[in-house]
Length: 292
Ligand SMILES: Nc1ncnc2c1ncn2[C@@H]1O[C@H](COP(=O)(O)OP(=O)(O)OP(=O)(O)O)[C@@H](O)[C@H]1O
Image: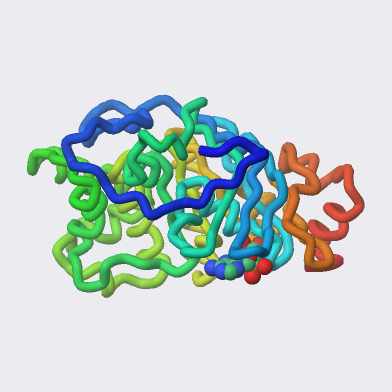
């Protein structure tokens, strides 16, 4: 990817053939877990058309940590998140400069397949989006098919159970794995989406307001799931819910785009310190609900 003084126009990158080896270190189905990975964004600047929406944003998301991206609406949190796994480039007018490194490897390396970046850095969206007509089992395994990953029937069955277990859904669906994913409750559907993301053994899981469409009970279950998952996958979450950021994250980054200027990180660091003793008055005002 480009250096900071250079702007890259991002083309759509076609997925390579299924047999191409995965270069970003994720494990194959049935293989032991890859070690926890650090994600680093360096001097990220982003544009939609002529409009700059992020300005030289740098952030290290530590291996095994849960990093919460917080800040008022429109400050660029989702754009930043989508840049981390190359989803920004899906928007035709989108451009960016800077670097994203997964354990030191350039996620935007032109020699790297787009599909490998997406597999290593999974994403869970605000609105649960299982394939509604597909069975629960097929939903979990959908990523394998999309990435051309081959696995034996037994490995697939193990994967379905382990991913649903990690997503906190196994006991609720173990007797109806052939039922359609669309028949689950909203909270269950979101956990199914988490299980689907886990099936391709991502090293990082990005979550864009994963609980905003859910009730408090489902939210609590997802938060517990995140805390468990952080043992084996680095998590980055966008949330508007300050209590949620305080409950689940190990570090926070406070984004702000004041008066139409591009978004920047005003302050980042240990979550406890950000909430109890923020260094910047704007952070204090935001985390205490005085604006935003
Ligand atoms: N597809 C797009 N085309 C043009 N502009 C966009 C697009 N997506 C986002 N933007 C603009 O980029 C800026 C950052 O948006 P983004 O969604 O990243 O902010 P956010 O902090 O995640 O907001 P929210 O908390 O409301 O989701 C906003 O001004 C938004 O209008």
